[in-house]
Amino acid sequence: MTDKSDHYRRLSEELNRLFLSDPAAASLRAARIASQAEAEGDAAYALFFQGESAAFALDFKRALILEEKALNLLPGEEFIRANYGVALSRLGRDEEAVAAYDRVLYQDPWNSFVLTQKGASISKLGHDEQALKFFAAALKTDPHNAQALAQTGVSFSKLNRDSQALEYFKKALRLRPDYVLALIQMGVSLSKLDRDQEALTFFDRALALAPRSPHALTQKAVSLSRLDRDQEALDYYDRALSLAPDYVLALSQKGYALNKLGCEEDALALYERALALEPDNQDALMAKGMTLMRLSRYDEALACFRQASLDRGDTPYFIGYCLMRRAFHRLGQWLRDVLQRLGPGGGKDR
Image (tube, rainbow, N blue to C red):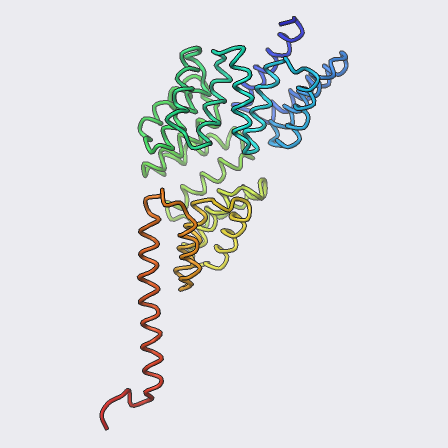
């Protein structure tokens, strides 16, 4: 590795650490580094840091284009490839991201950052038990890797082992009290354990650091709704969606809050928007089905439940429940029709 390569790699590592607590500052810092690199004639590194600036500002499409250009100019620069993998992952292209990480790990098998990112992508692909092995390997290399600790917590939470998850979030926050993701996920696990009042304190801490985080705004809204503070929750969902209009979690959860307030048609419109973006989103499918069932639109509700994965424990129950509700509904309609045909006498002997 040349002195120049090592210099830019260290700058990239510093930016990744800064991003954990202050994404906006990381984006600005990356843009300044890009300008300096360009002034020094380092065009490929300038492209890479322009991409990182875009990524830290959550513009992952632009980040991917710029970092791919940088990688084409410097195909052997593995720290660029690793961050390119992160951009792929944030765009939902996790299988490609894993392939990028594997190329880096072939050269540097104990790279703690890349092991962590590979584990995160594997988690997103639904293989959390496997992901935990990569986080453990990352922590064996670097026990102070706050991101690996937090991602371990995320995988435990996805496996519904939230008490274990909390311990890892606490460890991450001892190392980095300003780690926004760990604060948010700590709140999520507390909420899943029905400790929503406590969860709100962690969401508030996250929002104090990152007031424009759609994820933090949405998760705070979820806890407010669970505490039956749905009108307040709607304000936070609206703030999240003003920043990220296509944020599926915010769309579907806002629909749930509207449902609780008796606004079923408005809720349905949000579920439709969520499903237009992610047609197989399980939570949106189930929520849409339950709303349709409340509106006595049983055939449409059944279509939603049947589209949902049978791996969900509640899917067969809702299919059966909807079939029963539809049968009683049709029986009621038939009885009303019979009584109408019989006329005012109701069929009594005359």
